[in-house]
Length: 260
Length: 304
Image (cartoon, chains in turn orange, brown):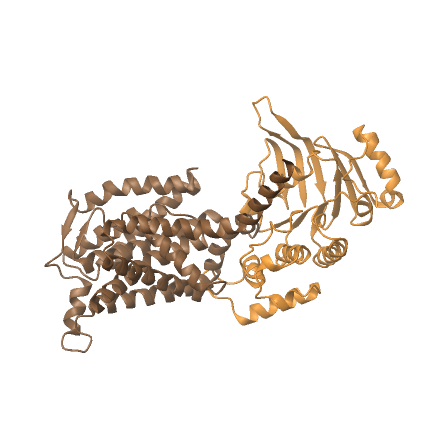
């Protein structure tokens, strides 16, 4: 599904502040695979996502999605088959538009000059009801009045209402309270499994990194330093993973990495 | 006195089209289009030239098209040429000064005393009816109603919603695979078309156009828009907000007329509208800041 070949990205190239964030990175993700990505701050996790989504362009290398070279395609074009969520729940939706208007734009059914029909509204309402977060009762509420958890759940539905080929989750539960975080994780698992969406998830939660999905990647200084899946991953404990982290990076854990 | 009020309402209705244009560009798309003054004059000049050439009805679509073209260029500069949004408005505004004089045939003034305009045509139709002599009021009212209906229908469509989202959170628009540049382009095109229509109607109702007809129009219209915002209160309904923008314009013109009656010199219009804009934006901001400033003062006093 996703193929990255020898991809590199340097910020502020040709200046004394040049910083190589991604270095000759190779990555291959199979159709329907759910990959968890861990790594210290500045290891290039978010930049990796930006390159896949097209909000940044790589300096070298190729990014192939579903057999098509998309390395230089603009973000809004890739957005038709890539969904992306950020840590900040405010980024994914327009605050002054209602829940329904946000969702209607993401669903993109019908022509530009049409006014959405009642049937479509019912369908979208039904999709919100499945979330069980009370959003279906707040269809006409401006999004700015929702809680962070509700906004993130809405963004998740917006990103997957037309199932994308790839879903990029950039610590999308890190800013939520534990209860909302758990709900959003549950919804994430449900939606990706139901639609067989290929998913990459950045997390700082070591437990999550081992429990969710089928594969765990560790990034350090713009390279993949550890890649584990299958039986080996099942046997792995958080302690093992932390030891691996130390071994790979030569550093102690950052404060922000959660062990529990 | 009633004559004065009628003139104020007429003027309010005609210029409310510019205010509705700003409702689209400033309130919805979050772009402050500084080419508004020039665009207003562009509509006035284009309309006048076409009317003088003997096509009173063609003058309206001609003005709208000219305005849309100008809006398109402003949008292109800020989306595709890397020029800051405010700067591209100023640049287009400056360029329009030359273009407007060129349109008027190397002159800065055109007279339409004997020209057939939409108003004179309507005047003839209304002769002998109860509405005799009210052609400006009726024509402006029809234009405002049509634009209001069009604008509200448009904002309800997928495209209109996408334009509102672009002003609200461009990142969300991109991730919904909508090109925000195209949305800015369409929004500014439509708003500039409305501004130009407003200019066209004003010049025809005054039976003359000069190069200064649009000067200060942006600030005056912003003042009206912000008065309308106060009228609308906390309502989030687009219909109510847009209708309040029209009433805001009429109130602005009425207040201005009364101020003139109280011997305020006519040249004060622009100062007054500037002060209104400053107050409408700064007062809510300062209100919000005041408790913080007060606490800071108190904290500093404690240190001494």
